[in-house]
Length: 382
Image 1 (cartoon, helix red, strand yellow):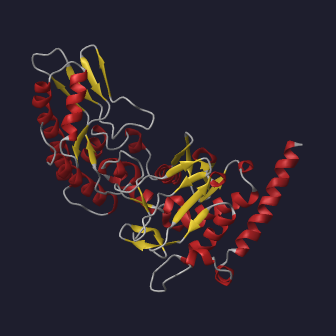
Image 2 (tube, helix red, strand yellow):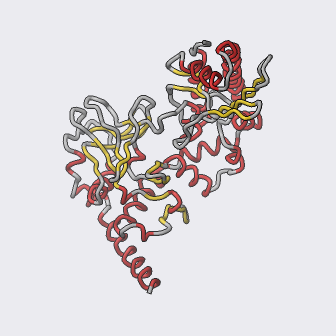
Image 3 (spheres, helix red, strand yellow):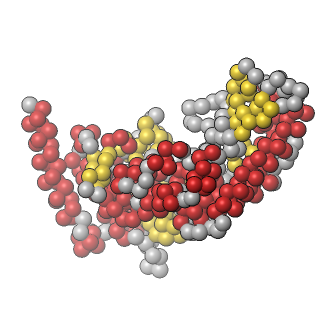
């Protein structure tokens, strides 16, 4: 009986998929335009009209896409308001969120493993969107470029990236295979929804800014941040504790951020029986609420800011941690300049090893390192 039901669903799915794809041809898409999307459309804009049919289906399946279009801007291809004087927003409903473990790649195309989690129309939409407008529309180029850079980098660069916790060690052995590219592509796009890592069609198209608001999670789905009228682009902060290097590590691009985190280090304190050790996490995880622990004679710090737009915050954080371990402010004042020096020197040496900015992922790494050096140098010693 179960086989019969599954088989019937598969047949219906294939029939529905073909009908949907037939409707999605450019001629029909232009004959039946999605008026809500292009209301107030300015013909001088260079927009991606290929997204139009997906937005129409997206809304029909419960999504929200108000006053938005896709085009090239300062941060590359992104989501923009058609009329900046009006509100604009996107909401990907929970019914279109797909668990990252429920998709795979087969013959170069993304497929849903278990389609029973969706209606036939939802399954067709998700697969078609990713294969024709995301993964299949040069959306995997950045993933390829990033993995190519890691794969071809000299050993000294690879060692530095791993030792400074700027990449995970297992990345060095991935290579540039279809599966590793797919894994990187998915990792760059996951959102956390009710404790699960999911992909969110359309929401992934919004670009990052460290100064924007984060995505909102409700019972109905994922919402874009509130759009300020008069702004030029819909932007979101991808995570609340981003640094330039954490952005490069996860997404492969560089941007100026509010904070920079320390690389791993260990310093012994003179006249004290305690050593200070930092593990070099690029921010705490969303479920972590304590950044340090004191065990025997070692004060271990998971994540430590060493640079910030608020110049006094890094030292204040360091001093607070040391005071919690029973160490004085004088100890903090004597150690923090050393911590800053370790971090500036490590990044400067890596820049020297790279020799030149280069292109692609290397160029973005180069910028991220420069941004963080600037931020760390501007922080106060205490």
